[in-house]
Image (cartoon, rainbow, N blue to C red; front, side, top):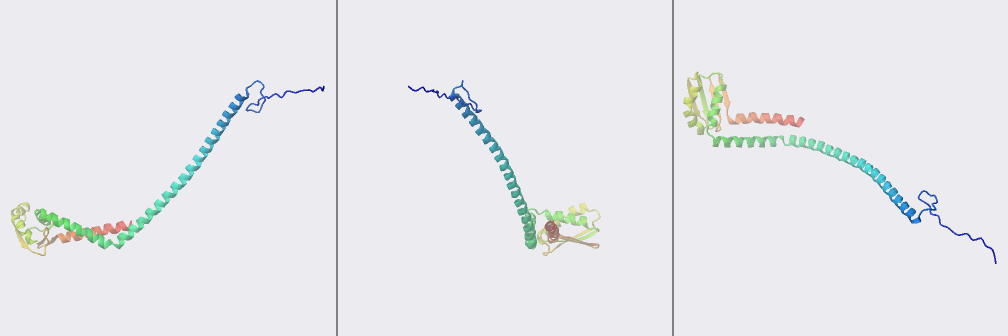
Length: 209
């Protein structure tokens, strides 16, 4: 019979730090190892997410800045195009505005016959000499102004004579006042011409700006 020295193979668990533990259940060590692995995985994920978020934010900012630059460039182009359009169609646009203004004034005159009365009073106020005046008005406004004589004399004490003349060349709502010292042009077309010049100046200033 041969003498053999038998060695029993004993399993000593290794803990998560790499050390042998004789007094601990192997399953418990495995459980803790798994838990630590999960924690390490979670930590790695969070760090990666944080870095990704930072990179993404920087990329987002860069894209946003590029969009802003593109919008600014587009707006500059629109301003230049707008100026070119305004300059090219200046006469047409001004003509359209004046035509609309004239239509509005004509409509107001038709609806309110007292417009001519106010025009005449304003014209007399502008005259430097008020003793003797001649008023040229549209035939449709003649009766109204002729009936307004008492009020005109009452308003202007220095006034001695008023001659009202029907003139078809005067547009309704306007008048032309003549005195020995000068005339007052209160015709509608004259006022529209003044408005047109003011619009033209404002238009050109707007294009230059």
